[in-house]
Image (cartoon, rainbow, N blue to C red):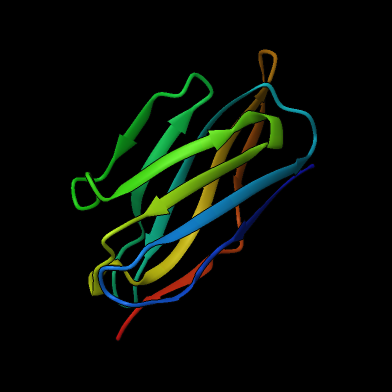
Length: 120
């Protein structure tokens, strides 16, 4: 089946930048809606950004102007560029994907999560 593997998390200073990657492998898929979610201790998991096969994007109000979601279809990889990071951005970030092959829905998948810590 399909596996999602995140990378790029780590420790960064306030105001710094970090780029997260989510690489998909396994079954061939042709269409997707992919998103980044995050969950901080004691808080609900929230949607950060989404991107579709056609490149349409959406962002949470809290990250607009600071985060950018993008993809490299040749590498089956989605990125989240995070700039001007704030302590409140600290969370575990999860990659999520709804995948299709032709008209068949393959399923809904989650990555394992990657920790982002924003601290001086």
